[in-house]
Every structure is written in structure tokens, then in C-alpha cells.
Image (cartoon, rainbow, N blue to C red; front, side, top):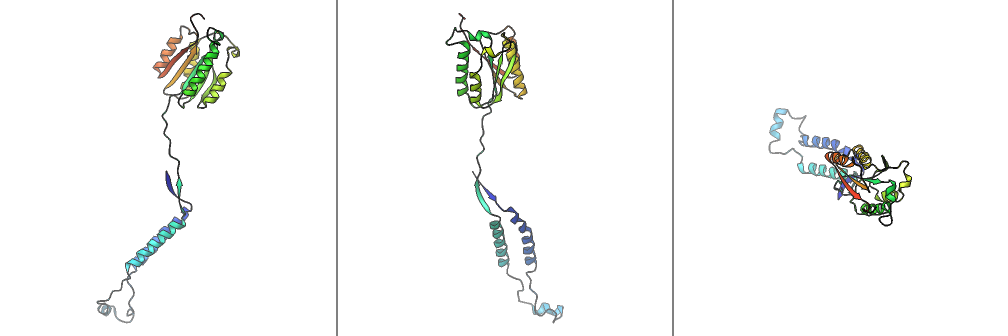
Amino acid sequence: MEQLLFTRPFWFLALPPMAVMLWILLKNRRTASPWQGVVDAHLLAHLLIGQSHRRPLLPILLLGLFWSLLITALAGPVWQRVPAVEFRLQVPPLVIVLDLSRSMNTRDVTPSRITLARAKLGLLLERLPQRAVALTVYTLRGHSVMPFTEDRRLVQQTLESLAPELMPVQGSLASAGLAFAGDQLRAFAAITGELLLVTDTADAAAPGIARQLAEAGFRVSVFAIGTSDG
């Protein structure tokens, strides 16, 4: 899309004085008679019968048009391409809630639960539409690893370094991870949002927290890792 701009717009300040001068010229179109000052005023009217003493209007109008075009040219008009505004569908933010308890090291899936979880999340991030993503991990409580960002590559790189051995305290409370992630969405001022819980087990309080989040407008999904043999 192109837009007309002026590089020297201050030249338009000359327009008001020009308008005043044109008004004066139009007002004084009637010329002075050479008999004025010699013949009495009451006789002068009879001498001017049949004579036109008004200047032509066309030259004044042409002069005004010329001045307007000159001022516009001096103002430096240029056509400049303006980037089109992009409208993007607002996609709700997503919080990934990853279980980092020791049980995620179990090898009942190949090569292990945590490795499979990282791989699946990496594929998910590649296929997601552009959106804000946060990364949370938990054992007995939630921890923020990555605040909301649209840099999916950064989230993927961070995922690769996560392992249960990094957690200071062990245990597995999915309810704590979900509650923490819900607080993140609220702090982000999200009206709607999504949480993806990645875990191999869930404590008894987790379904209740998930229902509370759903009532608040946040959708909760679960990606279960492991087998019944594990």
C-alpha cells in the first residue's frame, strides 16, 4: 500500500497569506477611473455609463491555482510504500507442565519416559501455530523454567536439558504443577489459555484442580507417559 507524504510540509504555511492576497485582489477588482479627483462624484457616475471598470476574474483564479501548485511542489510530495497491517488470529497461550519425578526415568518405553516426553513435546512445538508458550516442571511443587515466549526454538532447546536429576526435591504432585501453571496464566493476564500436563501419574487432588482451571476458562489436556507394566 502506498501513501502520499510531504518531505517539507512547512511550505503549506504559505497558503494562508496567499489566500489573503487573493481575497484582496478579488475585492479590489474595480479599477479607479482617471476622472476621479477631477470630476464631481455626482457627475462621475454619468461618465462611467457603459464602461466596465472591473479586472477580469480568470487571471486572479489562474494566479491562485499557480501559487497552490507551486507551494505543493515546494512541500516535496513523495509516494511511500507503507507495510500492510497483518492481522493474526489470537491463539490462547499454552503452558507445558512436565513431570520431573524419578519415575519419569523408567524405561518401560523406549528409550525412557522422560526422553519420549521431550521428543513428543519437540514435535508438538514444531507443529503449533504461533503462540505464547511457557514451560513449567514439577515434583512436589511447580517451578517455572521458561516464561511465556513465542520463540519455540528456545523452548525446544530448554526441553532437551530437562531431567529428573535436576530437581532439588523428589515426589510427584500433578496438582501442584497444575495450580502453579494456572497462576502463570493469570499473571499473564490471559482470559483463556491451555495447559498440557505431561506425566506418568496423577495424585488424587489433580482432577479437582483441573476442574477449577476449566471453570476459570483454561483448558487442561493430559499426555500420559508409560505403560501398565511400568
